[in-house]
Length: 366
Image 1: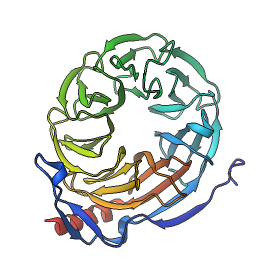
Image 2: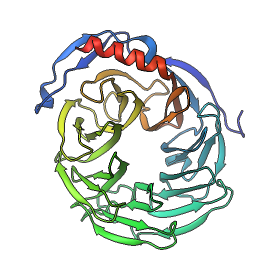
Image 3: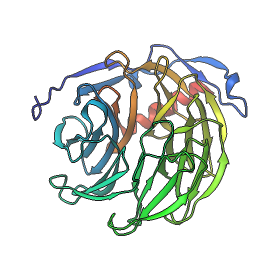
Image 4: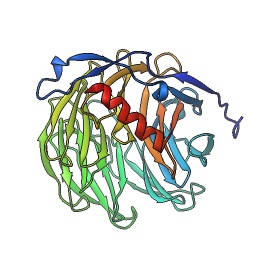
């Protein structure tokens, strides 16, 4: 028992014994060519811990050295859980709101962080979650006509600004605060449809959403410019891989890749399951989770150029990999994510060994 919450841990096999790798595509993701590739057992086993029975862990962030925070929606809406050992053990922290928590804005300081709710409320704490301040309700009512949450993304930028997106179906807005959420500026509609997630890149910030386009800011979120129309469907999954490489995936399952910090994009693969999130492992490796049909998890080891289909998340029936992060320590890389049914899944890699294994796997793909 951890703080009254039942935790069970077990090691499971995530990858199948034999995997198939998708050859990178130039312009036609639907014509994916498959070839057999033997992948080491090294990527297979995950530790699984149930922390929010019934779900849903949809927000997770590292808020300080060794400290990880996650937040719940659905049956556990408004509840926050915390780990002080990089995701091994978890305890209940607080329930500052009774609405779904859709995103966490980390500052790099364990005592100061922010949460965004599905009703577009921004809350903040400066004492590690003991007390909370309601900073702003950005919308009087949900302006999304498809009954999605009113807001999905909050970010604390490298310059100390707070950015929030909304899901207005007539054009997603971005809101900006430069005084830690006390006052806010509505920057207006950035896109022609709802906005989803914010992601830092090597030289700015990008945002995606239901329009299927990527927008970018290089001035701390003050101005935004359309980079490219990737799809006619919503873009959900987004991840910066380093080395100017960005990944995006749309709702039907096409994965897009940029090698110039989001300025131009090409499709590289298509799987017929809806995209949820990527987890950048490091050294060009990443997981990609989906949430429809078989809810498969995929793997790349070459910065998104080719992909390996793998097993679904082996927790309980109907579960899937929700949002995840990478934690980097002096010697290790830890991939950690929440699931739709309230589990945390975790895999630790020793850095030197991870780099070696990625190199070995990539040689088999050539």
